[in-house]
Length: 284
Image (tube, rainbow, N blue to C red; front, top):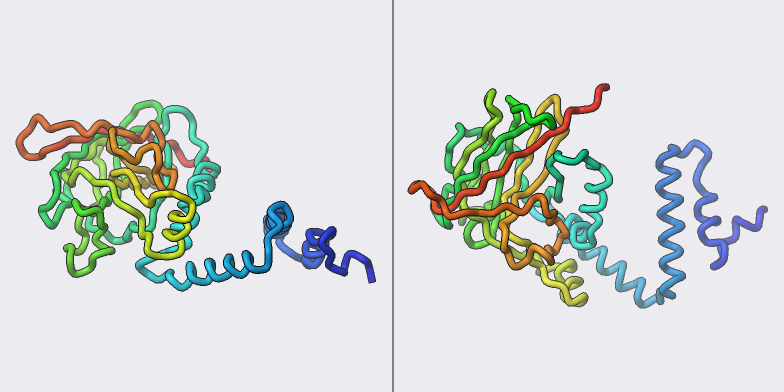
């Protein structure tokens, strides 16, 4: 039997990776071999103790136990460690001028109602009203018709409707709009407020132990899709928010910070204007 079959501290990486079968998918082999190499390197570098490893196992166990259809603690863990934003950055390297992506977040809900342009998505009537408007364009500045714009935000208390079932109306501060030939969108929501990510679980405890806060700066979510263009997942952040430089999930990008201005017209208190630039799907 080869000596590599016997696990030692010195050859731990080689011993584990050598056990993969010959028919293992090549990409899976690449990913797992690298994971083992870095994981073992981390454990050796910090000299992880048995007690510390047991704490880590307990942390991961409790993280999984909090996951259900309405809460995903592992997404929060990924977000707060910057992993979600890094994976997103690698997947969406866009040319200059195209709208930048940011984190999707755990509060999107499929099936929000499609509404006529100009509709109000604030169903509880609370908060400071804000008109959102702009255009959906391609890289050459031409309007895109048929772009589907899915939007959602927290309410004036900093909670999404799915966090307060029975207390907020279903689909509160959510809606879907489809652009016409001019590529324009227009709807009324509220000026969003800063809010903390759920911090009553193991991720919140981790942030506290690290001297970090759980707050996200105020933002409106946008999901833009079109059969001929790459999907955009992004936010419009409120300029001047106290948490822009310390977003708990690292989602802020300078190009996504927008001036929410006092409205000149009487039907809303605020207005936010932004264009979105989509890039064409690569040919198949």
